[in-house]
Length: 79
Image 1 (cartoon, rainbow, N blue to C red):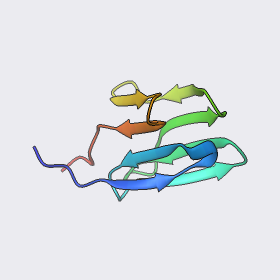
Image 2: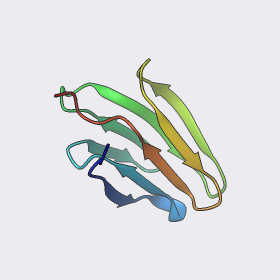
Image 3: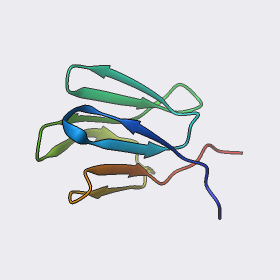
Image 4: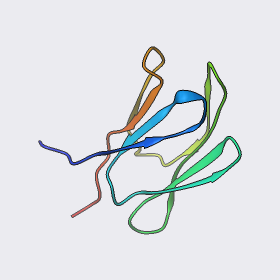
């Protein structure tokens, strides 16, 4: 499976990697990721050394790499 992704720079040197159709909304250090159906997929806040997941869709798959400060959303838009 070959997934197209886009890297998005966030605060504190963090990077979000996700499908380019997903939208990112931010308010200071709080973020919301919106999917192709305009549903909120993920809500989280960032600090220098931590990420706090505040809410996620039940079927959301993601990886957090603390060493590289990346959050990768594995899901792709539904066909």
